[in-house]
Image (cartoon, rainbow, N blue to C red; front, side):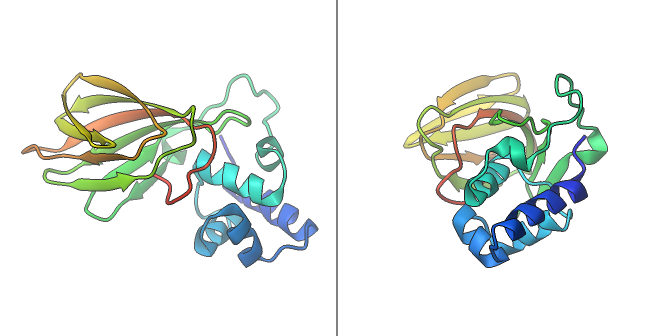
Length: 191
């Protein structure tokens, strides 16, 4: 389990040791000042993408930002500690996977209400991958200009160096999971 307050203190100490202001690190890391401030105060659990950006902005390895636990072979992220975000349009995203230093992997559960379009997400770096499985409902996944309709139990893989979009055009909610291997931070907003 990650101690968000301890993580925030480590990031703040690294930033201050480099004599960077919050604004300077936010710009170098390509994250918002409000996100960085929330992470430093231990109020927000950053995704692995955001942590990688912060590490890049500090000029240190990700492992230095996220101190490994004494036993790094088993890392538990309790349900109560999972980061859940309620997004505009009524959809909800929960990051299920623990943060593992040096491993750019995320496992995310998303719930889209009926008629919800989560929008388009920019491409990751070449070599990034996403695996999607629909738990319930129906999902339209668009990769570049190709739309694919998925239903309960269907799964799909795509090279995540493409723009992609998720939408639920069905009559009920859609719950789906994304397993993402991310080679480096995106150039625009995180998913």
